[in-house]
Length: 429
Image: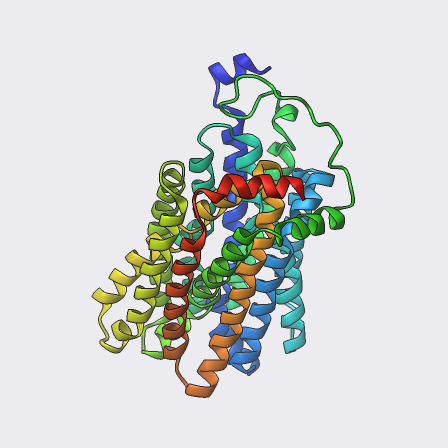
């Protein structure tokens, strides 16, 4: 099947990976741009920062908790249809932002609509594409896809910050809206539901496996909760979910939402702070892609141990760098933290796949990622609350660093030799 196509052209799996890559970039920039909108929303509408943080926290939590349900919807309706609906939802949210006037509208738009719209792209799309379209280079594909959320920051966050600075936040929202439309059209024209629809086998697969037909065509809610009920009986699920809660708390929730404002509180200009955040994206693209490559070769537990431990150290040192007013230290932090930002995702997915198997791991990872976003929501709201109480973010970053050290201990409780046994147990459930 598709032999000539695979030999003479780029394998269509890489086309699908490219579509997913740019879709995640757009969804990622919608989410990561929240940090640069805090100050403009506060100034124009007079809203309290903790209320704005609450809206973004709701969005972070909802896109995380929607992950397992998105995975189940993909099993029922196909990846293309769910991607189109999700991108249309993001487009709707950006349009409604132009007419919002009250805090409750911000919570509905950026909390519920944009939160749910970004759910598929930022949770289970990466492992789904890697598992279904790649037999070989799966870790590399996963690393590239998970790095794409940071690539959105790399390319667009400074641009959005400059547009806000020189024009208005509405002009920045308009740019995001145009990107959503472009990606929607790309999905319509080129996305396929499966390798079979494209007339090829998954990349690296020499012989077609048995077609499982329609066995997954069930109620998506049942699929999602069945995956959860099986997962909670396995110790590794709780350890991965707990460590990923801290991962979300220390990245998307804290750095993604409050880093720009933290820098501005020390007199760093908006565009400079956004550029530092996007600079992290350069190194996250490198770090996460490399992490995907390493996850095929090195014990995933040790990768996570070092990622969390080093991240914790960097978060504790960030307030010191700002207090010293040292752009050199801030640049070093951006490089160091960027290499580590989403590097935790490939080994976490790798352990989940080892424990629960390929078929179940996407839904189970959806629940693990829901824990990630619960942590992100806690930090997004908690960071704003801590700032309100102390008029400083220092304690928020210090506590996040301590939690990262705890996460590094969580992952080492997972014993390498129990992975196969845990998978057997999960099959029996």
